[in-house]
Length: 225
Image 1 (cartoon, rainbow, N blue to C red):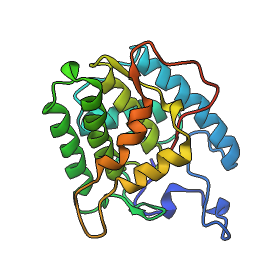
Image 2 (tube, rainbow, N blue to C red):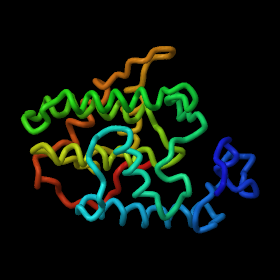
Image 3 (spheres, helix red, strand yellow):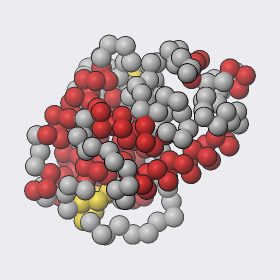
Image 4 (spheres, rainbow, N blue to C red):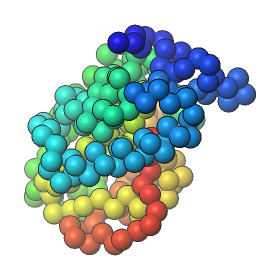
């Protein structure tokens, strides 16, 4: 088993591109071509996600850190040795610095998620309240960003399973990826602060939340990570 304890250890060193600073992630296919890996990843994760949605995957729905890890492990089991394991490196994206991998921040964020979920009677929420509470949960999930890859897709499945306890569904196709990504970035805490800003997600969740069975067929793909 490989040791994933540095940024470099997650990737094949011979694939490193000094111009972009990127390299192909080590994977169970031993695939060095990043584009080929991306295509295989898309297919495999879509299949595993469908299995979760259909109830074929036996994942206890505790809506805590263990639940999110189990989702990630199931989605990425065909691709990465570290599926379901916290990242050991810090991650930034744009102006966002996600929870540190070394000071317990990831678990603190996911403990917040568990507390938020447990504090709400989800089946009784009307639409506006669902939008607000779902935004709060997602803001914490996004800021935790616990995995080296696949955080967005794992959070998406987590939120879909949460929505199953309500009269609502999530139509991820309703918001373009750049709009979604910007709202996610703005939902992060201010520099040096801890508190997230879920209100920045209210508008996008307002677009994607629909009554169950109202989602139209779309050809576009939802935001990924």
